[in-house]
Image (cartoon, rainbow, N blue to C red; front, side, top):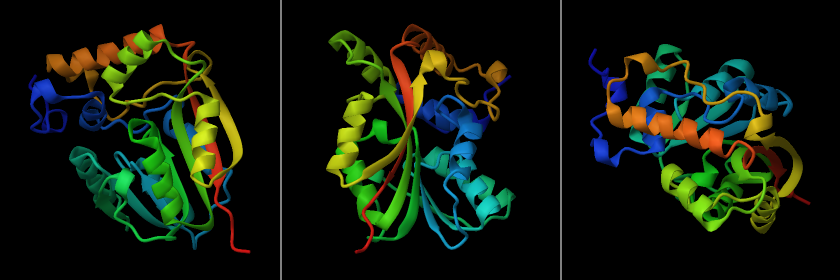
Length: 253
């Protein structure tokens, strides 16, 4: 069976990355627990209908869709990957939802200052220049605004060879420890309200691949990337973790 268009996207095989794989497969949740875990965290925030929400790194748009349907709030969905934008646009059209969809970089958000009550970022900030992205989150949040950020974390400082192996595959410069993440948030003006999470070995679930058809994939490069991800997840199960950071900005005096 030939690979369907959604699994090719016109990308040269040699340039495909882990992020491209997520886009091509239409993966909905790239963190342990997937969307069900995100949904549980959002329910704790007591989101109001009059809130403006930014889904930063929206992927296929599942979280944005849920926010609109469950809470009726105004949602802006942003992603840099053109295939993710296409997947999200298809979802919003099929579900007849009004979502502002923007292709853009979270390191330089094409958005106004103090525009949002809440930012949701799911396994995206770690793939960027963390200082730049957190500063941009702070810029576009309203005073008193809140940030829910679910990110890859290491349980202890990695050896050089370990960091190199993970960085080369996942395309990131750094994988912070929990304490390093806390410092990054504080440097950008955030106050940490709560932290949850554990190592991959103690966290239920993996990638949400319900929209994919792995058995139909004949593209050897995509299969290699998927297999490598599975291999690294197992190899570093006690080293890699995820944290759910809830943070806020100071309000107006």
